[in-house]
Amino acid sequence: MSNYKNHKNKIDKILNREISLEENVLYFLKNIEEKNYLNAYNFVFPESIEKAKKVEKKIFSGKYGKLAGMVIAIKDVIAIKDKPLTCSSNILRNFVSLYNATVINKLIAEDVIIIGKTNCDEFAMGSSNENSAFGKVFNPHDTNRVPGGSSGGSAVAVAADLCDASLGTDTGGSIRQPAAFCGVFGLKPTYGRVSRYGLTAFASSFDSIGPFAKSTDDIALIISVIAGKDKNDSTSGNQTVPDYTNNLNFDKKLVIGIPKEYFSEGLYYEIKDKINEILNKLKLNGFVIKEINLPHNEYTIATYYILTMAEASSNLARYDGARYGYRIENPKNLLDMYIESRSKGFGAEVKRRIMLGTYVLSSGYYDAYYKKAQKVRQVIKNDFVNAFKSVDIIITPTTPTTAFKIGENEDDPLQMYLNDIYTTSINLAGIPAINIPIGKDKNNLPIGMQILANQFEEEKLLQMSNFIEKEILKSD
Ligand code: GLN
Image (cartoon, rainbow, N blue to C red; front, side):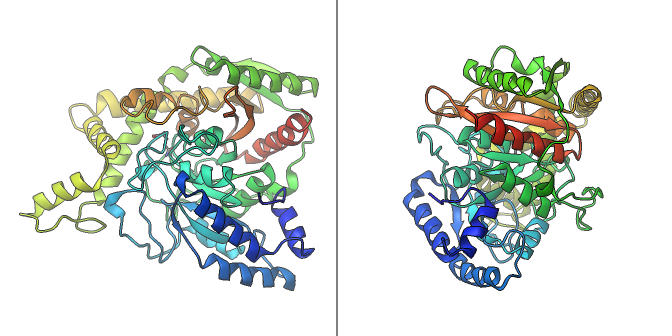
């Protein structure tokens, strides 16, 4: 086990010569090899050993970046120059990126060590990491179970101690749900808080990049680095980026909203009980707990899937065998090349979404599905706007169950989609949310709790997460 609490502690230990950065990277590389059966990584970068030597020198010189020596894994949907960018799809199996995503440039500028690229559901579509051309990812707490998806590899890499932290992406829960299933912290920032430049698009009006880590401290540190306006992403927000790490302590007791729609039937009782335990302790600590309503919650899954499939069908039109990636050999003609390259290159779930997305956008059905879903999105967003008039933050479960068995939902896409019942509304509204690990169920599987805040109020979210981590859970 890497034996430091958080990044700050790691730097202290390096400076005190209690640990060497090179040995630390070698440890992670060895652990990745030993736990190869988890299938968390698509690619591992051995040059991280050389990088460790350089960064260690920098640390001792006294001039080093905020993330110096943090060993990070990157979901394989984010571009790193001269490295493969496959999106865990056969259609991009041999594709190499020509440039760095903005988040990668920002991380490198602060001296991180990028150790590899992590496995995920193909094009980030899934909730179990069973849809990958590189094979399934397994949950380190129980290898008969899924790690969650789509950023399963990134969650497992952190949970199994195969790196310090990782980046994932969240379009409808893909950071928070695997974080919950694997027992780590995972933050989905406000839409636009982090540049999407260099992220392969799935559903552009939903996609967000965010960190997985073992503590709120490290989440705060990473988001402080990767957030901010980017001229290459016109949807990135202008709001200044606070140093989240300096402001992790509260100056007042917050009002916490509990939406009753999120605690109804279908929620596994052990998750409910654990959250209630925490809420009781928060009450004892002077927080006000208030029941609220998010009345249109029942429409979130349908709205989310209609809109994201529509966006995906148009974003994925670019993989046509002509410009990027896989092309069949000896096509009969141009149309044959398009059809066969796409039919062979994409996996089943991606094809299902392209077809459904094309259907809801087709002229005869556009008004009934796509346009209507856009309107419902606004209604769901308004539910949150109203809720945040009377509460500072909202607490909910992250998932209705703990990690389910491999294969359990594989043949039933609707059942699989229902897993996202508590996460998709957050992306419809564009607000930030974090998963925090709060304990285990009777099968020793991690339980996650979700904290939500209003747009660009990551600070409150991190303060709450920090308080629960340090004061509530540690006192257990
Ligand atoms: N599970 C959701 C889906 O399959 C979320 C995916 C994501 O956030 N990338 O669409």
